[in-house]
Each structure stands twice: as structure tokens, then as C-alpha cells.
Image 1 (cartoon, one colour):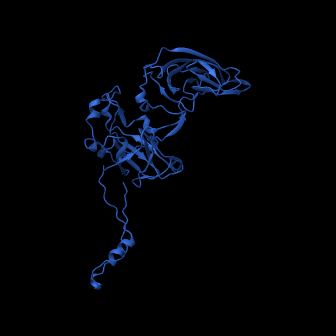
Image 2: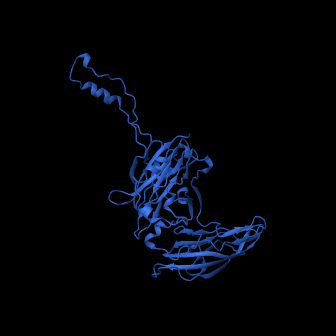
Image 3: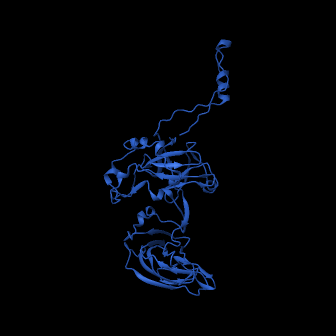
Length: 374
């Protein structure tokens, strides 16, 4: 952590002017002082830094080299290479600027917070705090820095996009990936769907069949209903196709639709692109293991719903927290140690709290220190 405290020349001259004696032997040396860098103990916790509320989130941009948060708007941050890591509610972002493309590596420190099946060991989370997990943090040194290609940065992708099908590079056949589910939050309802069948004509899609289950929150549904089939003919389409799951039909762009398929012509064959997008006011998530029988509306913010075009965050692959361990809507840190590689250095970092002293959420405290390669 690099923190500098500068003593200005004007301050020194002021002290000289305030001397009580006219004797030259009592005069104060007015030569400029050198900047001093205080010693900061390894593992010192900084924060809390507020990321606002769920309704009004704020993104905090942090420069690890300078050891400080930068006052940037989101628009300014998109063009700024000085910041390294940012926090907004439960999300952690890395800078992707061409002059400072930051990567993260998750060490195996505190891997015992999860059992062999990947389930959280509740007592480990509930009994841990910044003091108890300090030694694990201090144990990480420059010898733990992996090869450069082990670091992963943030990237951008579509939340659904082409994830609903499989492509065989040998036979060049496209088939439905009917084991992959998607959940869309749109128009006061949660819709879980998968693509159970599709047909293609050349490099376009001529039909697609969905398996659809709905949880209508306005109707009081507390879980997804039974799955039903919905087949949409996309061959010879003349316009983009807009699908409303509630009505089970293709509509126009001005209607309340949930997903859309773009109409295209390839090699004189017209059909839909192999790509699915959600509405601008909708969010979605991928449910690879069909794990969700219901969505708890009060906790929906923690499920990972994202907009159509979203960032694939390096921290999402190894989340720093566990949610709702004892029935309450709270987050507990795993106290995992991440290595953060910037354009200039490599740091270790451990998130120690998501709450301030009053228990207000969205307030990050963490420790970080620069590592020297050995």
C-alpha cells in the first residue's frame, strides 16, 4: 500500500515566521522537507466504502497503487486507466482499459469453507472475522504469484446469446442444449425456459421449441408452474421475432415481449439467427443445473440476474461471499485471498466486511498489499 503525506513549503515557512527569538542561533531551517512515506502494517483494513443502496447503487473505483478511492463517474471510469478494482453492491469489477487490463487469481486460502460437494460449511462462515483470518492472508507471499495466463479479467457477453444450442464441429450440426435453463425476470413474472428442439436450414434457424414454466408474482405464485411446450416457426421470417412467454405467442416490437430472435438471410435462405436476446427492461440468468424451483422476490438481487449485454466478471467465478446461511438476508465473507494483477504490480486482497458499524449493507472493507515476485 503506497500512501504519501506531503509537507508543503508554505507550512515550513509559516513555522519559521512564528519563531519567538530574533537570534540567528534560534532560527528554523526553512529548507524544503522530503515527502515521507509512513510505514503501513501489512494486513491493515481500509474502509468502509459505501456503494449506496439497492435502489440507488454507487460504484466505488479504487486505485491499489495509490491506496485510495477515485472520484469518477461511470462514464469517466470507462476511459480511465488509473483505477484497478471497483465495487458496487455485491459485484466486484476489474478495469479493462487497454493501458491497465487488470486480472484476478483466486488462491486456495480458506477453501475449507466449502465441503467436498461444494456446499458451504456454515460454521466456518459464521465464526470467521477479520482477525481470525488475518494469518491466512499474511501467509500469501510473492512465491504464490502464478503464471500470467492464470489471471482472468472481466469480459463482455450476452446473458443468453448462443448458449441454448450445441454445435458439432465435425458434422456441423446444430442441436438444442436442452439441459441448460434460463430464467427471465420480465413484466412482473419469472419465466424459466429451455430450448428442447430446433431445426435449421443452412445457417439459419427455421423453428425453435421452448419448454416454458412461469412464476407470476402478481398472481401470487411462489414457485414455477409445470413446463409447457411453445414452438415458434422462424422460417421465411420477414421481420425480427418478439416472443411473449405469458401469451405463448410471437408479437410485434411494440408489445410487451420477453425475448427476441433476429431475422436474417444467409446464402439466400431466410430464417432466425442462432442468438437470443431479452428485452431492455428485463434481466436474466443461466441455470445450468436446473437448481431453481422458485425465485424469492425479496432476494432476487442476489441471484445474479443481469441485463441482455453484460460483463462476465472474474469475481463471479469465485464469489467472495455466501448468502443467507442462517435464514436471514445477510452476506458472509469467505475471507478468500485474491491476487490482483495490474499493469504495474501484483496485489493480494481480502474482503473483510460488507457492512459498516451500523450494519448497513453495501459498505466494503478490505485489506490489500503489494506482492514482490520471488
